[in-house]
Image (cartoon, rainbow, N blue to C red; front, side):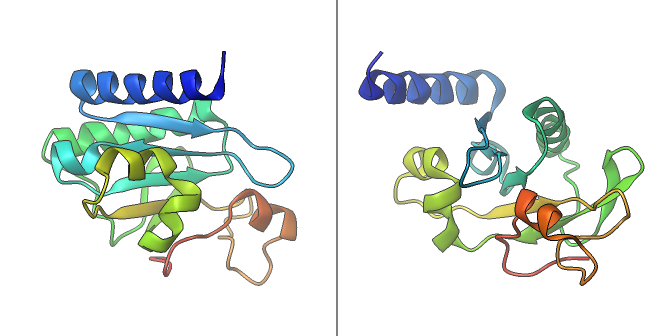
Length: 157
């Protein structure tokens, strides 16, 4: 399969999932240069909800988290992105922070393709370490910071 065919297949999948479910979850697997992450496409168009991105957890964990957020948006009872929540990861409180549009090219390429020139908001879901520390805490390890880079404008915690 050529790169062009795989891009076309991704685009068809994005369009099909948005038509069927109202949104699509795109997983970017970790490599030697970056942590893995997952992000939504279509939440803003379908439900008026910001797109979401989460770093450093396996897609088997991030996908259900993003499903919870999408279901809440679809039901008309979205999460309050200005407050932390313990409803996404058992025994951990996550917070949300707005992502600057200048970070979209690096971290939300398929969403940029989908929305074309239309602006859309995006928020990062930030989760704490096992010790309860967020990446910006002075005692957070460098390894934890590398796994979960904070690309957001500011933290909500």
